[in-house]
Image (cartoon, one colour):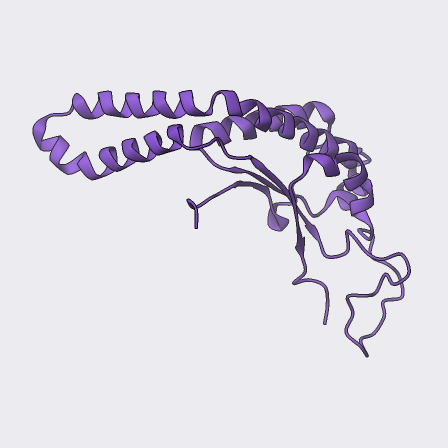
Amino acid sequence: DGPKRFKICLGGWSDWARVNSVDNAEKVATLMSDLVLATFADGVDLDFEHLTEFATISGDDEFAAFNALIKALRSNLDGLKSQWASAATARAAQLQAQYDGLESWQKSQAAPYYLSTISYLKEVASNEVPQFELSWTTRFNAFLPKDNKWNYLKPGSPVPSVPFATDYEGEKIFPVSGDFIDTVNIMAYDAGP
């Protein structure tokens, strides 16, 4: 029963998210952590489901770049803890000053937004700083058992003649970055019949 939590999501299947380089990864990590602080989100979900395809198509080391993104983002998110309460307090004070400067007729119309947002920001400032969650959304076949790579097929389903290029992608991410990730979301709806 606590307060609602929300994360900012980066990526997604439809836009084929990629990072391309360690330098880009560090820039993206800075942008995402800045967004978390600006919105008072509870963390970030990295929905990167096509690392193998981009590494194959471009020749870039998408796995090194993605691991660098995870590491930098974890560090940046952890660094927000010391700024969290003061940022919420400053935002509440800014909104209060804006509200106080409104004409009376404007205040009557804008009061619900301003007063509820100011109250919310005061709660954010007084609450314990959250553990900023870093999650990774990957495909159904990123983690497969070595002795049964087709374990997701229903009995009687045809077994593909060749493996998916993305099989075992998790082995290129989790050993390097697993300590920085709080949650792994498995996209299983595309696992097959």
